[in-house]
Length: 291
Image 1: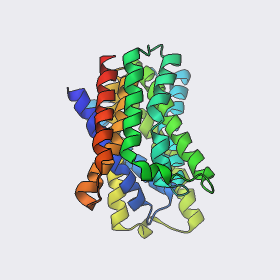
Image 2 (image 1 turned 180 degrees about the vertical axis):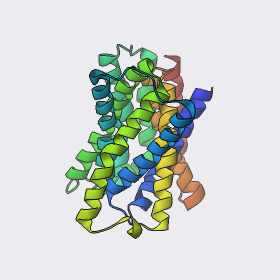
Image 3 (image 1 turned 45 degrees about the vertical axis):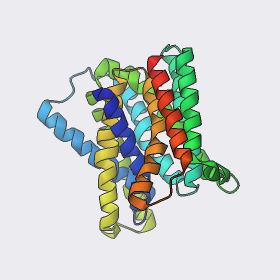
Image 4 (image 1 turned 60 degrees about the horizontal axis):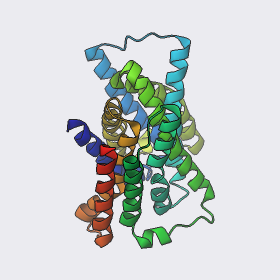
């Protein structure tokens, strides 16, 4: 039960992250935002390791290269392509592409981890996909525009596919090294890699940290402490104990939570499509769990 609640909390934090990212980008360039959020997340792991002890797994070249590759997939390149892509495409496009992530996770897990795709799992993933599309609503789906947005669309889609690979490859390594140790090292590597990139970007745009507003700093703090640190940690702790297909299907709850937050705090209208979509997503998660 704690694992399932942790997954739902992670998805809730990621649902809010889209709003936080938009706020952060108001006064900070995209790669700088990524560098700062990863630095904050890495500092959390450094503090944890300083208290509990540093990872003791064998440090050889094959292990280090695997961790570096995982860091590229799930931190630097993933966050970088997603943040830059959101500047060139509509949120409705990004929402539609995000719905492909659990399917990609299922396919990759079957090929590389040998996980079985039972009838219950297949039906559950399909129902959850239908529910996510219903929750978006017909108006959102009809607003999808490809003309003039191909660059941003390609970056967002690439970031989502990278997260699917990160999920499957990360599950394999977390079973060997432990979720906390693996994610901590991967995040620290990502921060070290992105800090020079962020510095170059600020130099290129002629800006500095002093030009970032307090509002954007608060958004970056939220992204680093809750989304990159807490939410990703909860996600990996679930991966350590559950099949990646079962973990991935929870990602379909993110659009539902986004709309609920918009309804509660922004006063946006919520139609019957959200209720029907939520029912389909919950049914899909239930079937996938039973599969």
